[in-house]
Image (cartoon, rainbow, N blue to C red; front, side, top):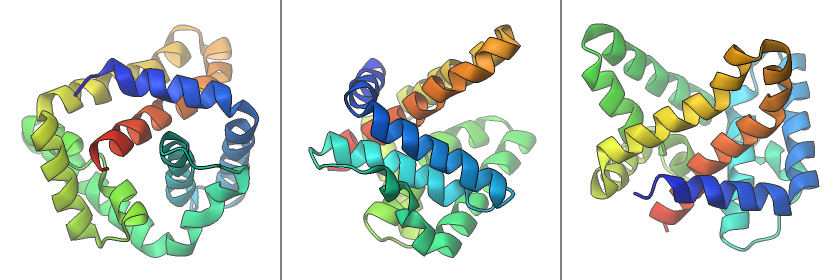
Length: 183
């Protein structure tokens, strides 16, 4: 895995489709707040799918961020189950949690994009990540985490405003990595 390429691809897609992705991100924020967070996971997957579709050369519209809501239960509970497993691994032995976070980083995207069940998404994600380097993927996730959260910690008032750039950029980078590896 080339760690920098997904970030470059994400930036290029973000700049080329700035209005569309910005509006989609605003929709994500508003609906997440209005629904007290219950729609966050499918909306986030919808945002990522905008990057996947753009990476594949397809046209995108901001209302497509809503499309995964139709698979709300499988996406939400599947993603929450994966999060609980990763958290358990982090709390118990750290290394399994880190490995699992890398292995299953594409599971929700696979569940939606390829219409897979959770176990198929987890298995396929693990195969993709292991084929392309588990530790490179973990390093990629760590870099994405720092890009998204470090400005908020260093410059709190200004850093939160930067989230309008960093969050779509990092979520888009994961989506671009997925699009490259899951062809």
